Image (cartoon, rainbow, N blue to C red):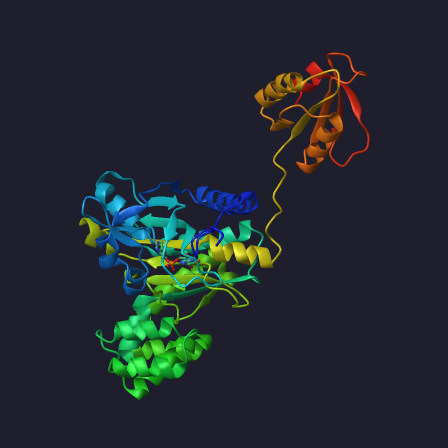
Length: 426
Ligand code: HAM
């Protein structure tokens, strides 16, 4: 058996790491443009941080163990509980709203499949201390701007948005009780994945009548016809909730991202702590899993740290995003790493190459040369294989001590240069 990474874990060879760095670069760029500052937390946390707050699906997927001190520990499966814990601990001293971002590696024992691994990186952007819907709009605009920074358009990606407060009011309007809400949410969440009969059976087991179950499925598609939907909202007495969602959409228009967004009441999000507007980003063809998901969680900080502050955020994974960029041809090929290759001829030794390399590196350029002693022809082959942008040849019988020949990649002509001058301008 050849040793390999564990199932669902990745080896990042330089090509894959270049792709990861490209994604991280875009994430950091957008987070900075929106005024977010970076933080991090520990990759291991007390188990009960998740068992109490994250919801059953994530708890089933935890990597957990007892440490040598007898503590129950878990590898972080998501960042939100850590973020909420950290902010809650210092909330009084912080300027609000808090706008923080992080790029954690997360671990979930999932069935590895397309777009789902057992480790992934996430961009997390979260805001604390702002209850107004403008904060929700700001966050979704940031998530969409990440798509733009990678060259994707509203033809490639759609943001599906909903509001749990509106959904709760509408569900109450068709007779779903608060005890039945988790089952109703779970059915909506699985609408695209599980067969209708299976969902109906689960709803029946939770005590929903056949008629209520049918109305629930209708609700999921109801926003397509705005006039009919308004009637539904009126009938359920959910006008205030609908108005909030409407002003969210207006803000998204002002932020220049409205054409990416669609209201879709089947977006409920699997995690237990969301309380208001929720959203997910998907590839428009619907072939991949969600790229990103988030929403408002106004009660989590209070339950973790005793400070009552509204909060909201999202997580965007690198796996689905990377896959989408590759299938759309938007993932750039990795750049050759080395700027200059120093080769030496028969009149010199590797020591001469070392002295020149040291000076060029001091100018900030990346430099390689053949280690050990090699013939010039072999050194030039190595320079070519490394994709060096420039090759500098020193110490051949035709050159004086302060001379070199320089050739740029993909150019035929060689230039004779004064070595000191060339290094000073490198
Ligand atoms: P989530 O929906 O569990 O939310 O994850 C967010 C995104 O992370 C998903 O849309 C997906 O792209 C990626 N992701 C999740 N699990 C995996 C996996 N096993 N393999 C690859 N990618 C994955 C959260 O984690 C929330 N804590 C987000 C949040 C932040 N809400 C508020 N603030």
